[in-house]
Length: 588
Image (cartoon, rainbow, N blue to C red; front, top):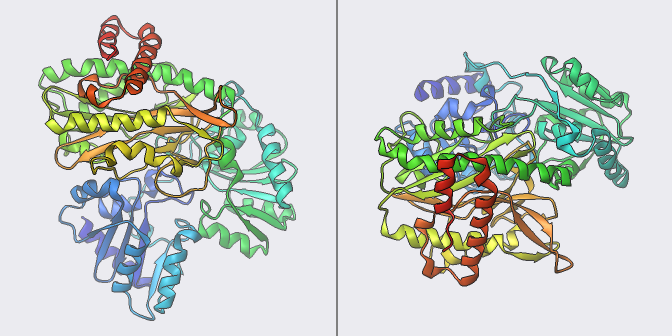
């Protein structure tokens, strides 16, 4: 199938008079999860990971993925005529230069790329006299005959009981930033910004409870909100105050900018696509190209949102504990596999109040599949889970009061000798972050090494970040905060929720990851310092811990954490799970 699609794409490229084409995994809103109508990369290559880029030339094709997805991409590409390469600008540019000659042209869909994302590619190709050409129509859309229709479900109000701040208050707060920058308006680039600013939610994107939307916030706090016609109902109109005007076409949205006599508009180029910038420049408006202030504002949760997250994590923790407690009995039946585990965990969450769906596609990896960092189980790949080895499950739920994300690695009987030491070193890194006290102004990249030290001590590491931001009934991967090796310049601030998830992966054998969500809070005893507080509530497998490798302080932290898990979760679960929980949280 891929061979036929590649050939059809090359014929379309020839028709549009370009010599190669870039295929990102993206939609026009730069969402991490994209609707089925925008799954162009998996349609062409079969690769379903959440990050990647394909490049197709007249002779060759390549798929670029990062370290999280190398094994997954190898499996999904199979014997297709697509070269697998590491995802980096250098690799992409070198490949393109090997395929294109001076005077030739690389096409791209301007709705699916950002200008900063293309800047280096454009510069290097220009040095070789190769042109970068925006296309009016995506060549893939032109040949994708059975492409699904774009989603347009209803947008619904998200009540004050969950948000803790009215939309008007948020708009006025952000609008003050416009006054400081002497900008007339702010471009709202994506559904998440609009969902937070207008206190609305929807169901247009898998795992992300938003309606597809763009908007404009003006200096006086009024706004224009674009939603598809099918998204607008009476409840939404009643929810939005008179200072918010609704439009149902992108043309109207840009016309509103002209009518408001906007001379200078604030646009975040990192999350606004090239096509948008083209439209704004065509209006002869000055662009203030800086980071979106809504992104930072929504990252710092207020007291209501933090309380909601804690409540959601209690219910979610109870569901996860019910799931973990049943695994041994399910394995003993001899009819339990990775897909069965996904369904069992989903059923446990569905039984909990307010559950709206998974916050991402569950990673259910037994043995060697657990070593694939962002493994996605399928009927073809699903392994039987046996009473030996390690099982890794990374999952999360969406609730109106919070978004959850948890990873647990469990032993199912005898396991490889190396796993115990490696698990304990991962645990040491996890505890190091959980117990860290740090001064205000500290960025995530400044503490990432703390999580890795116990692994680095023996020459080991992991090819992913240590932590990502998490939204409030929004994206499970939310910026701008993160903990990782990459420099962000973003300091951790009170109210931010981040994950704490060091890991280790032994290709072909097993994967280890321990993930809790935490939030940043002021230190009670040290002015000017910050600390983390745990949100996630579920036991960490004691069978995989080499107690001799833990310090006294590390053992005490784990014992305190397990005591809290037992105290909070026991009243929420069945008697059988409560018995399991008692054993699972015994002091070391």
